Image (tube, rainbow, N blue to C red; front, side, top):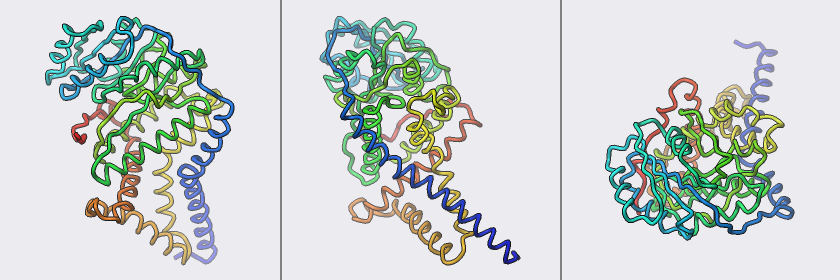
Amino acid sequence: MFSGKNKVRMYSSAIHVFILCAAVIAYVLFGYPLLLAWLAKRAKRRRGLRKEFYERTVTVILPAHNGARWIPAKLESILAQDYPSQLVDIIVVSDGSTDGTDEIARSFLSRSRIRMEILCLPRSGKASCLNAALERATGEILFYTDVRQPLDRACLRNLVSCFADPAIGVVSGELVILEGTSSEEASIGLYWRYEKWIRKSLSLIDSVPGATGAVYAMRRKLARSMPANTLLDDVYLPMAAFFAGYRIVFEDSAIAYDYPTLLNTEFRRKVRTLAGVYQLIAAYPMLLGPANRMWIHFVSHKLGRLLLPFALLGLFVCSFWLPEPLRLIALALEALFYGLAALDPLVSHRWFLSRVTSPIRTFVVLMAASLCAISIWFIPAEYFWKPARDTVQL
């Protein structure tokens, strides 16, 4: 049993830790977005992006592992780009594909008006594929894109137009998620819209901390090889340009289209991307200090996402040690929140209740993914790569 004095100390400690955890959660989820909106509004008045199309040579780098399902439409969309064909070459890198991806890609060689090269590598991971392509790339601009997402016809032209500004080192395009049919897909779509708002705001202020892996371009002179186990090539490569003094900007007129995914696919993707943030901090420790001119945003957004699940766990544990009636109120609210998340799989997406349960469940699943990301310190990076088998075809 606790003495009266020890009880007071216990309650005091629990309240202090509870308030600290609540403050972290409130800042990451609400405080930082408000700060970002204010800073972006101020930046919009003084910072513009100079865009003008100049013809530049471009090497398109397309890695693929067992992408037979998507590669015909992808290559068609590349060949249909509104860009001078004599200035473009394509490097398709097949990462140990066994489903006919290589043969399909080769079928485009004879009918393509654009110079194309097919590299067939043993299974070695995306980073190794990009490194191999980089060694052969000759274009002034490198256009990185993934196999699953077809491109809007003006995508490449709009990306390249941004390089008229000599301060720009990397341009990230916009990934438009096609509309799904379920509340689960709608909640993930809502999350993506929030992420795109953050990227647009950061781009106005200075730079986005990375790029959209399915659609981005960078100056060839700024690209560099990366470790073979790199999980976030679309952040590792842009960061090299950023720390060389260039900006990374978001261009929403450079569009690639993707299918909505189910929550279990998004969970795996989020575990990988957040594990990649741990890798990134190890590769670029200056991200956390004044050498990073966007450090407050990196800490608030990227690092904050890693801290959120621990703050939520701290909030839950401390709730048991709060004095009454705070303990009862806190535990009741948390039980209601997590109960709604657990209820969501049983709720029809046609019901109004799903508009509440589905976003809560999505949030909880993403927090679980963030917690699982810490496993990067214990298991090899290749275990984080999983094919997107359950994308929803429309």
